[in-house]
Length: 295
Ligand SMILES: [Fe+2]
Image 1 (tube, rainbow, N blue to C red):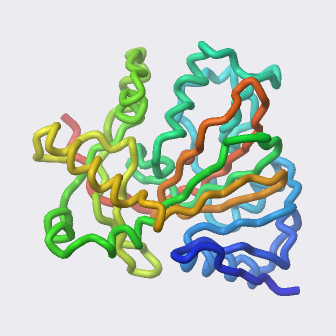
Image 2: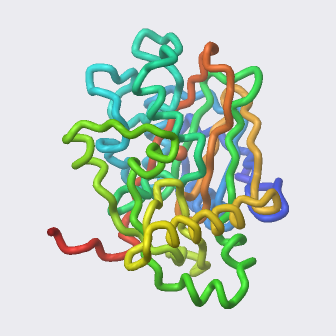
């Protein structure tokens, strides 16, 4: 049975059937999924029971796995999963939900703010793949917003105003907006802001999109409050319900999204209950803009 994709939202998102992704894929399958990603930006696969090894093997069909270093405050000895896997659960190494005052947990709450994965890296991520191993009974939906549709709905004046703007992205901006402000010197160096274009062009489709994220906290050459106000307004515009798909997780769902044309966030859930979500990330291949020369 060939791969088939059915659009499940007026603007984007495809539901995929006819494939078992735990097994090696044919080049035709890979091409069909890539084409689906370019077209729908988010693909949903149901009933895909995966081991970490199978998830990583599936991920490598779409490019190299991103080096996860510099993306969190979890110490190497506290990591629950092997290299190559991003742990976006609420679990500690002992498999139990992290305590309320856990620094790791509080930092990871930033995933509940709208963002695009790894926009805080000079070369940001291509795809993210999230596998649902233990789901929440209530809450914990992931929401996706389509940044191409949001861009196209802007008026021409705004499009012209923002066309060449460059933002500064850092995990310290997103976490800082939640009042998470204490970092070691090492973390400050690791989370140093990087530059990203505010309007980016998809490398395959040529479609323009807003490149927003809660990690964006400044615009080059613009006073801070003015920049934050503009970013806030654009974020409000881009996350209107008409541009948003709400994913209600089922056990063994796998969702892939293209970080180059979407934002996402997880919604609140009962953190006394385990939520085991495991992400792999396909590295991007180009910066969106040149970084500033080193000071
Ligand atoms: Fe994310």
